[in-house]
Length: 317
Image (cartoon, rainbow, N blue to C red; front, side, top):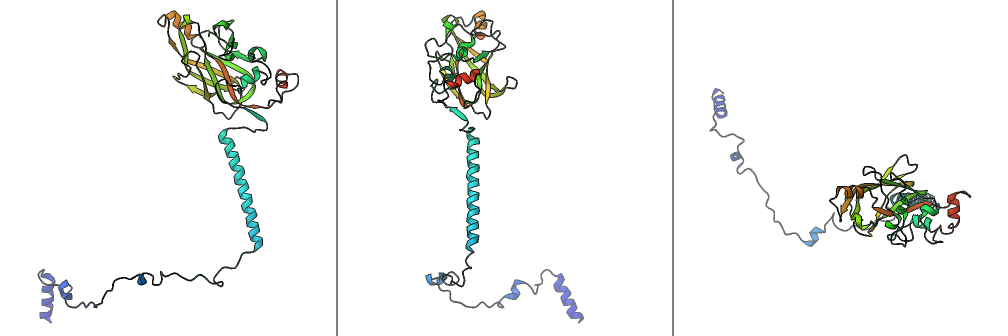
């Protein structure tokens, strides 16, 4: 016994001694079965469970649903589809910002100073008469910090029309270069979609004067103003007789529209003369204000200025 214990201790402590669990101890003890492996055939690939299964029998199919339940489900689906279509229509109106067509008329833009603008409609009484500046014919107003006696009606004049503004009617001038804005009262609420401006012809003695930075605001009561369009270094009106129309996105309708001049480009004759530069910076370099959008159809009471105006053109809307 003592000899066996000593031999066990020697095997445990001597690193050169082989462990009874070493890989060498398994040599010859593993017997692998000899099996002939045949190559895969097409038939073996289609063996169960991959082979096509027969169709289920009538006994395997679920019982048919109650026809009444199917009818109720169909009615529910039709109702849900109607709700979805209604929501899609509401979303489409919101995305286009368009009010109800039954109560509003769209003055739709096609080209600069076409016959579709709101100012043109008022000036021609719905196309029934020749064009007359609505400042004088319909009571539209243009107000701002201008010099006393200045004729601001030129702001509503239509460009490229005989007698449609220019030096012959006098140049609108602001009282100072620090306050340069004009407010147009169109005498009706309108949800704007486009607006147009034109470069105002100026006498050659003043050289060239172009508005390149400005803002358009709208207001319901001249108290709170909402920004509708902002322009910075916009050269669309830089050129003799230049006209341009800009897109406006608004969810609200406004009666008053304010144009604030922020920057004027001075070019041409005596551009280095400080006196002429100051004088030209107080000029209003635009006219031909036209606006498009959605206006309420005529509902003005009889006897009012708007009622008289709309009476002649009610059929147009």
